[in-house]
Image 1 (cartoon, one colour):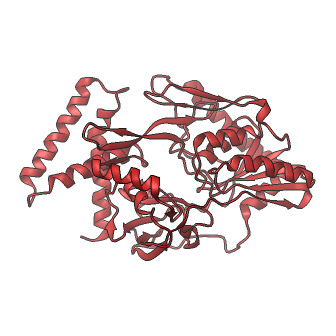
Image 2: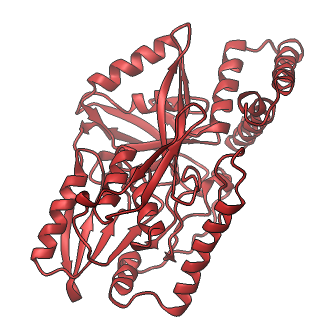
Image 3: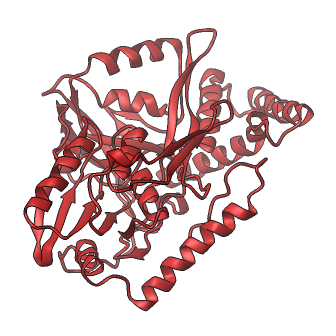
Length: 434
């Protein structure tokens, strides 16, 4: 079976699973009768596969594939692990000292790269947002639980793992071996730019980097900074609460975000005046590798009118996840709560739109395209100039132009309209992507 046909079947299977089972897990919109009807249809389909398929199928693999498809249709970060896999996952997470630096999600049944941690083996190998991993250590990642894929990347420093990577618009995967390195989080760095602009680069929010940002701001102010640029590009790691704490460094009052889930009580996160460290004018830089805690911070700073956001739309991953253990020892790793901005918009899947979009080099979003399609020429700027930083410096120095002000206000008005039109029984209303 060729790769494109495999891809089509995968997408069709995910769609079928989503249609059949989504209602069975969405209690807020389905009656018990509707739930049983969905389960009944699924059971009948399995029965027909077993009795009518051209050859006797491996029903264990069929069922596991259906489970993984169901989870991906709900949440690209969810995973089902058997009892043995769950034990191995817990042990590896606790003991592993080496990693590749890849942040993963699922797309079309395959493992997709959210980002590579700056300075990690993955980043040095050129892996970036949107690349797809077809194989890991010779094992196809289609229907591989995401948590299991993440576990395979962990191990002892100096050991290696072979990956088959599909780049955008490239029909054939390229093979590469990543050598695991000690788990080290990159440091916060600063730079004084012309015209009294202080640049703070935050590559991660792990390892108490938020405190390092506070110290960096104070250092820049002593060096004469009158304005700040907070560079959150490719910052995709760190607990959600760290993103809230980061935003609080720049804000004395106001709601930064809130989290809520079906069985998770809503929690509001308010700014604490004592935690703010600066009042300098602020501009935030983002790209499609900005995820999790960093995009919570970016959203809060924008919604409270503390900063303009320059760059690309963020990835769209801001949730609380935890393993839900089943009776047989297996586990489902689920998003149990999502983070929302003060206007009620969930950041999950939607991300944060910049108020000043710049050089969006996203290759038409893999979620809307077939990564196995024939190659096409990509239109990219030939210059290696950092266009996002250049624009952030311009906004920091001169402010928004009349056109940019109007565009930014349109985004804010859309958020308010979505909030006022929201039916509380349906959960947060997402603003469509432009």
